[in-house]
Image 1 (tube, rainbow, N blue to C red):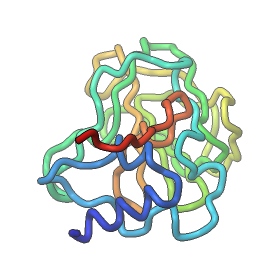
Image 2: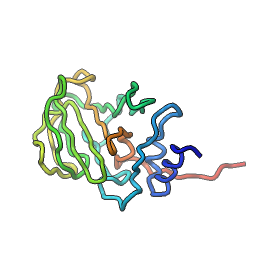
Image 3: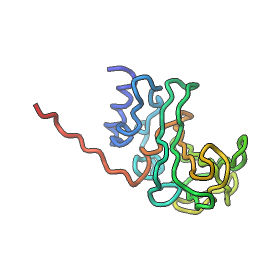
Image 4: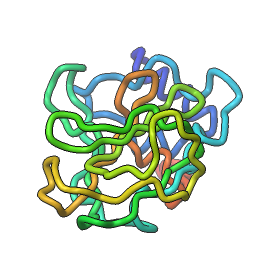
Length: 184
C-alpha cells in the first residue's frame, strides 16, 4: 500500500468515506494532506457532510474540483457553482472571517474553521469583515463581478492545512457512501 493509499484508508476508518471517494485524486495527482481529519476528535466544521452550499441549496456545478499533479501544477482548486451576479452568499459552517478584500481583480472572502480548514469564495462583495465570527447559513455577502466565470458563477475552494481539497467532501447534501462486497 502506498503512502497516499494508507492516508486515504485512515480517513475511511474515521468515518469519512464520502471524502475518500469524492476527493480521491487521480494516480498522477498530489496526495491528500498528511494531517487528515482523523487525528483529533472532529469538530462539527471538519466532519464530512457537515457544511452548507455557499450559494443556494444545491447549485449546479459548472466545473468540478481537479487536483493538480503537484502543488505548482495546473488544476482547478475548487468548484465553480452557478450563481449570477447578486446571488446571496452564506457561510458554509461556523467560522472566523480571515480575509475580506481584493485579490488581483476580484473580491475574495475567506473563512477559517477549527481543524485547519479555510474556505475561499470569489467573487464576493462581503457584508462581513476580517475578524467577524460567522454562523453557518448566515448571509456574508453577494456574488460580484470578476474572476474566471464572467458573472455567472462563484468559485468555492477549501484548504486543509494549506492544501486544497475537494469541497464536495464537506457539503451536507451528499449521500453517504455504502461499500458493497464484490460479486464473484
